[in-house]
Image 1 (cartoon, helix red, strand yellow):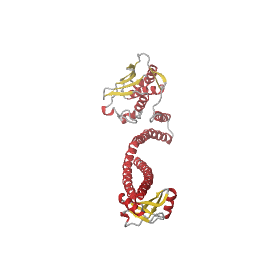
Image 2: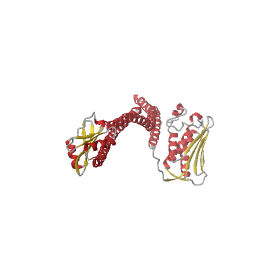
Image 3: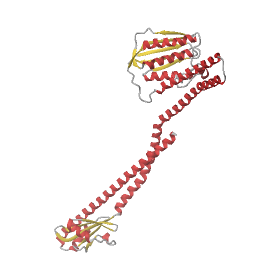
Amino acid sequence: MFDSVRIRLTLWYATVLALSLIAFALLIYYAAAAGFHERQDESLRSTAQTVASAYVEELAEQHSLAKAGEVVLLELTFPNRYVLVTDRQGNRIASSKNLSDTVVTTPSTALTDARERGSSMATVGSLRIAVVPLAPDRDLGFAAVAEPLSVIEDGLRGLRRDFFTGVPLFLLLASVGGYFLARKTLAPIANSFKEQQRFIADASHELRTPLAVLRGETEVALEKTRSVGEYQNSLSLIQDEAERLSRIVEDLFILARRPIDAPVTLIEPVSLNEAIRDCARAAEVLAIRKGVRLKLENNSPPIALSGDEELIKRMILNLLDNAVKYTPEGGEISLALARRNGHAEIVVHDTGIGIPEADQKRVFDRFYRVDKARSRALGGAGLGLSIVRWIVDVHGGEIRVDSAPGRGSKFVVELPLK
C-alpha cells in the first residue's frame, strides 16, 4: 500500500516538476532568442553606422562615390557580414568582397524607413539587414550590413541541446530524490500503520476469547432448564468474563487517549504521598485475596508535581496489580516513594516469578505477555504495563525494570518535579 503511495507521490512530483521545468525552459529559450535577435540588430546597426561615417569622411577626400566606397570597404572588413553601399535609389555603389557570390537586395521599404527614422531593419531570405543613411543631412545614399540568421540559430541550437540534455537529467535526479524523500517521509507513517494493524489484531484477539466464553456459557445455560446452583455457576463465570471485558475496554480507552505527536500539558497539582496511600489501600484488597503481603513505605516529606492525578493513580495501580498477579501466595510486595535529584521516585518491588532478561525490553509493549497461558489464566491482556509506560512518558519521566526469574521484579518510576 505505502509503496503504491510512494510511487504515486513520486509521479505527481515528477509531473509537476516536469511541467515547471518545461515552462521555465520555454521562458528562458524565448527570452534568450529575443535577446540574441536584439543584440544582432544593435550590432548590425552599429556596423552600418561605422561604414557610413567612414564613407562620408572618405568621400570628402576622394570626391567620388564609387572611389570612396572602394576605399572604405578595403579598410573595413567584417567576417561573416556583408557590407553594401548604395545610392539614394538603392543601386549598388560598392560592396564587400564576400558579397560577390551573394545577392543582397535592400527592400525599398527599408530605404524609406532609414531615410525617415535614421535606421531600419529588414529580413531578406536568410539574412538580417541593417540600413542607415550615409549622411543624415545629405541624401547621398545608404550603408547596409547583412548577417546570416544562422548565427542566431547556432546559438539557439546549442541552448536547445543543453535543455534537451539537462532537463531530463535534472528531472531524473529530482524524481529519484523525490522517491527517497517520499519513502523517508512515509516511513514513520508506515510504521504507525503497521503498529495500528497489530494493535487492532491483538485487541480483536483479546476480546474474542471472553466474548466466546460469554456466548457459549449463555447458550449452555439457556439450552434447558437447570438448577439454581448451575445457574449461579454460569452467572458467576459470565460475571468474571464481563469484568475481564470491562478491564480490556477500559485499558483500550486509556490507550486511545495516547497523543500521536504533541505532548500533553498537565498542570494539575498532584500529591504523590496521597496518591501512593490511596493506591496501596485499593491494592491491599487484591493482595489479601491472593495471600500476598503489601508493605507501604511512605515516610518521605510531602512530594507534589504538576500532572494528571487520575493517570498517576492508574499507573501505580497497574504496577501493583501486575505485582499481585505474578507474586505467589506468601510473597511480599513493597511500594515506596522518595525524592532523588529533583525527581520523585516510585518503586514497586515484588518477590514474584520474575522476568527473563530477553523479555524485559518488551514487557511495556501492548499485548505482550511473558507467559501467555498463565497471563490469560490470571486475567491479563498485556495492556497494563503499556499504559504505565505511556503515563510515565506523558509526565516526562522514565521507567526501568530490574528482574530475574525466581527473584522477583523491581519497577522504578522517576517523575520530574519541575
